Image (tube, rainbow, N blue to C red; front, side, top):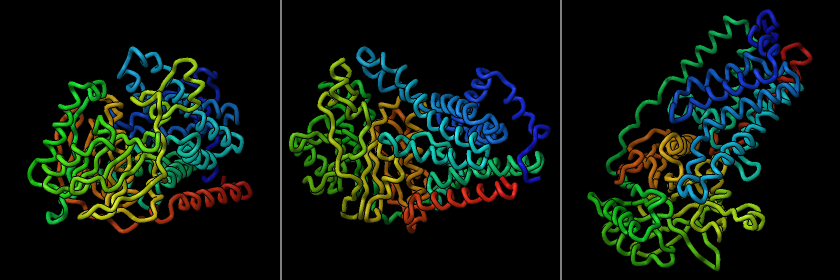
Length: 499
């Protein structure tokens, strides 16, 4: 009962083993595509569940290291090509200059990230073990979050951020939750078909259970306002359009009732922060004393930063400089080499390039407490969020999702902010240039939001924070402990025919 299913009990695995290489490649690529449909714009997480279940029932580790590697890479190519469909959008903002790069961008991203999956499957094929696949595939997610600058966008578990299942990330974190999820599939694959199917159906049903709606915030709490000017990327820098978008932000700031904290999005100003004193003073005046967090480019000591300004009583009191920059967008890797062939990044400052800030920090905002700022891309890195030495009362995410188009990109990015709230037990206020601006409670539930393509603002009393979560306290040590236990089970299983 507890040995891996033999060929008579595993017709799917037997069929895949017999398939010619190209056909097997297409089957695993199709499985990856199905897994990707759990993310927006389709957003059916049960498809991600069945995609992962297929991997463990199909037992690709039986193909040996080489065959398993190709199966894993095929799965990754199908998965990432669909999840990252939005990655072509930045190249279409100025299609005459950058449009030719779009097919290369999606091909290289999907194929490159799929290498992590290929390596994970290869090790499982070497060990001939589904348990090892659960270990290596979760380790692959951790690896792609850290290596080569890191890009943890599109983790399988992120598809479940709106259902009860993801609440466990407060204990396990995103990587520990991934490992626990995959270990379940490895366990199901060991059982007799009927018992394994019953357990799979039970967990599959759990992944469909939505989180209850957010509770009403305490009315006496400080009022938070997030502003969304709905500025198209191809228009926001034009001299005749910039005043229109600035006026939208000022009108939102002046709206009644007066807010305690008003948050403007990433690069909300088309002037350098150091030249924006009149705008700061006017926003403070019409905001009736509100504290302001305003995204703006900063130029200090001959270096440019993508930054956030804290404005109090009309004066610039503190700044935060974005530390985790977007390669090819905010800076150019191998800049000299690319410049020789006339290739520059997508940012307005691409030829100059942004300089990274010192790292995660908190701002002490009167009436609110400690606020941790995150600028756009930084919100996808769970391990960066928990690096601050002082626990924040609020996470403020400012972003410019105009780069992500109108399909799944903005919604996927919003889900990252929800995930950070759950993992840390801290509410999030998210202001997008355009995208989905929202105020999110400490369980990742959206209290109020402004949809894509709409100019305006939303208000809510500051949601309550939760006590520090297990993940906030210990981070990836939880993942490491789970991985060690699974590895010991694997090693012991070889001796007692358990694995």
